Length: 596
Image (cartoon, rainbow, N blue to C red; front, side, top):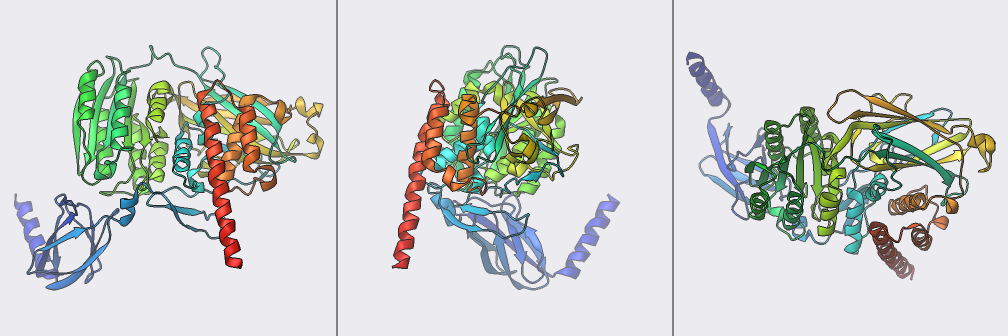
């Protein structure tokens, strides 16, 4: 008690010494809701303060009158005068970009010329990581390359959303490895008792006659849905005001309700929501009580700001309280990613989730919305949360992710999965990994520091390398090349629910097949890669060998007519071709008018 009195006395004396005035106020939005964690910069002392939970603040000052600047993500900055003899009240307005969420348009593009520099695209108020495209690597100097594997599939459905809205796709929204993941191509069941099966193939390159392609398939074993371990699921649902649109909270509610219908009595579901405040909407409930869970989800409404950081902390806390040893413990967050209260940066989210993943709780991210969609945040969360990431553009995609592919999405076979590839310099002059751009680490002779991803049940992860053969390996009929491994692969992974790393070694033979004679699934994979490279405006895709007509013809020839997803890609290809041909004509017309 004595120490407390001394502390209060010292604090009081410090207050008198540092400021004889007290500036008080309250900050709200246009709906009259209190805004917490608003940045308050007092101009007289240049210090940064924050508004409290109720939107209020109190600051000691050495001057009676001052001016302040208020800033918070999602709102227009406010600069105003403030006086100690008058209670300060202010209303912050939402940024105008948020009022046009249904019209994503390209605004500007910036770049510099340093090696580490990247393109930055701005699409309304959406955010994407800037990507650096993988470059050709000298195989003699750097024969080894390593990269992490995951089953993220968000990029494909996000591209589909842009095209459906007749909007050119920002290049940084295109992640080629996620286009390949979406289709689960060329899946081959591993041998009994094995976690993975690796398969490699080679073909000539359809976009560069001087190159070849090497396809690597990493196939995870399938788990029996009747025998998978019990699940402890925490639905973390964004119910903030930004989710109040048909393709946001209503879509999320429908998606989770579909998932609930397939739960078992041994599964447990909790619901955490955030919208103005963070709350446990539903305590842990058995999967047998389906109607109770579905009704609880149905009662959700959207309002308030977006305290994503606090919500993530609470969701992990609930997951840890209900933790099932050797079970499937997972937080499933559904959001547009537009956090505007508390820590909001990718760096802060990365630090938070990296710490929480140590608990053994996985993280699945489901992105929705447009206009203010924060792809970069969700990708960060999924990567650091040892989980996966999908984008739901409509109810069909929700059904694909949460019902048809439920074991692929939610049941892990292995964690920390990454691949080390050692090329044979005698056969390979140089090589380039297609895609995996934002996950590329510095090329080195060791991949010990690489952080791998999670691979779910029955997934086929494909990676494509394009390479230049050496002079001695210049013919696809070169028998010595066919009998000599062109590369050696070391797959490293940790089986789910264990802490022991395993290795799987594989040798890639040197036999090459003409592209048109190779497996149709591989032809389809190469077409997807070209599609992604064209959208990314890749310098490695020669215009003469990759116009939209050729791509459409390749897709038509390679697709499986009995596969709904591949048939749907033909429609996407046709619509993309129309959109980009139209954009090209507009640019040409504008240029001609300028010349006149």
